[in-house]
Length: 382
Image (cartoon, rainbow, N blue to C red; front, side):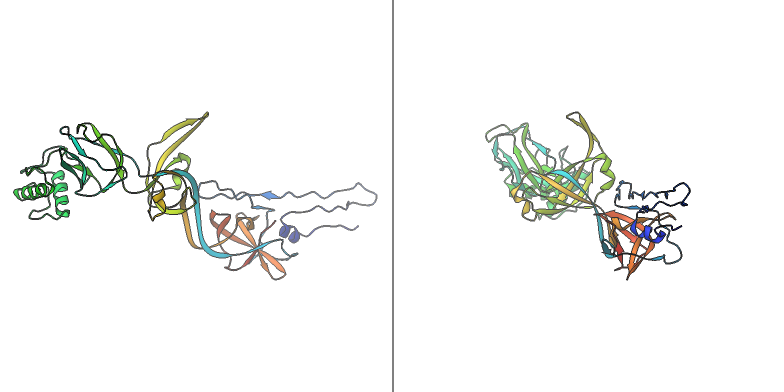
């Protein structure tokens, strides 16, 4: 009796086992057919993102003794080199380029509007946001809006904000603190005189506009000759921003400070940074499909590429994770081991051996591995 059987080593190297075609059995007895062994398909996932390594499909292989078991094989169908690189995990999402949220300037309630800036103009500290009865209403930088008359004897953070701005504009003779003193009054009088305003030595709500930095005029709400009451104009900050309605299922991929790449409609790319991740979820229903999103804001560097667009739809690639200086192999090079875990089939001259590896991050069709030498050649089954 002659039995035709493929060796275990050959079956492992080929990742599948082919049953022989010869029938086996005694000449005068019933015919027996060898049982076909089934290949075990294994899916690898990483980081809770359920990234399936569908290419990992292998018969469970036993590594054997220390260093793996060498087996003679035919020339591998495809190979790859274990390389050292930076592995980056990204997420592509849609966003809208703009200047962020708008705010409204309300007139001081009296007088006639005699000057307005042009939409798109940038206003900096000390410059007029608009004029009423030829009196300028200047911009001061701060986060505390005026809600009372600032005059001698008043104390508080709004006083400090005023004094900080006066100092930045070049006025001195006072201490920047929370107290409005006679020295503060003298600086205010000098400032008012330089602006051509009525010299009172005090600042009332409506006399200035307070914003946390330079502002950009978005839209005019009033006209020259109109009354300085009600909405006068709307404005935004000057930082270019991309707003992304991110699905809450992907919220774990982003955090403040991570990098992003923004592709503009003309194909140009600019770099940005995530500056905020919203904590309020919004539910939207379109064509019987409901999505729940949070707003993610990416600030982008205006290096000249953005000047063509005030607003525009853009494609954003967020770098959610990065592993530098790691060894990687194609995901398809992984094989499932009988002992558990994964290994790779290392080519050594005319033979190969299976080596157990520890896997790390998966990205771009590659996987981080430890336990195998850099520049080693591994089999990538077809």
